[in-house]
Length: 152
Image (cartoon, rainbow, N blue to C red; front, side, top):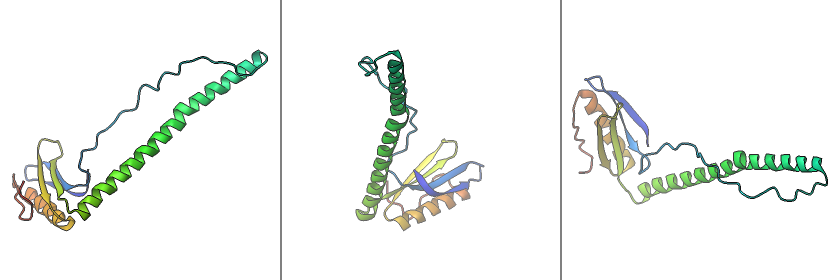
C-alpha cells in the first residue's frame, strides 16, 4: 500500500504513481462470506403450554438467530480484523523505524503494464528516492537510477 505518493505523467502520456510501500504485502480484496453455517438441531421445548406460546417462542428464536448471524457475529469479526490490522501496521512501521529495515518505493503505471521497485534505508531518504524517480519518469527516462537507492 503506497500512501502519500506522487502521480506523474510521462512524455508518452502514461500516468505513473510513485510512492513508499507502507505494508510488506499487497492488500487483497475479499468478497463477502457466502456460507453462514449449518444451524442443525430442532426447536426443542420452548416452554409454551399452547400453540400461541409455541408460535411466539418460535418467532423469538428466529429473531435471535437472525440478529446473531446478521449483526453480532459480523461485528465481532470486523472488530477482530481491525485490531489485527492495526497491530500489524504498528509492527511494520515499528520494525522499519527501530530496526531500520529498508523502505520499498514502487513506481507503477496506471494501467499496470510496468512497475519499478527500489529500496532505501530511512524515511527521508526513501522520500528523496521517490521524488527522484518521479522526476526522472516525468522527464521520460525508462529505467531511472536514483543515486541514494540501495542496490537491488
